Length: 194
Image (cartoon, rainbow, N blue to C red; front, side, top):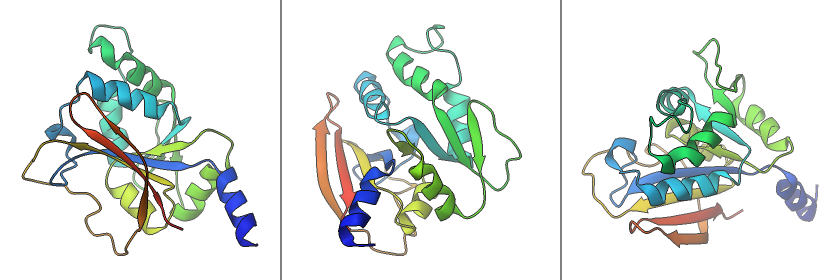
């Protein structure tokens, strides 16, 4: 395949985007970062660029426990409704070797991770979003992430977990977008230099 054909093929594939909230000192613990109205609105906007979510087992179980409640029930602030509706309705792919079954519009992904994710990327659609810590680390190692987004919050947590701890190779990124949120957080989007 020529370089031009490789690029056309890569552009025709459904992109895999990684998004995570992080403090200035690299902490990715969701409990350390307040989810205010601006963050919920922004997250709903970026999720609109996808039609499916890719989770590892831990993130899937955490998201299901937190967000499976129906929108508009009064159980959560109204500002979370668009986010909750998207998360609830979205197709979810769950990478796990221990779960025997999933529901909540989800499908288990088994076997070779690289091959499985490449098959998902080849399906028609707007894009896939991945969150969490362990699965994105494995995907970065395999060179499968097409866009990294770090929503950097103006705070210091003083503890972990930290981004990409244990990454075995250098990943060179170029800035492709940024947006400041009302809270002072800054969303930075990067694409791998290939």
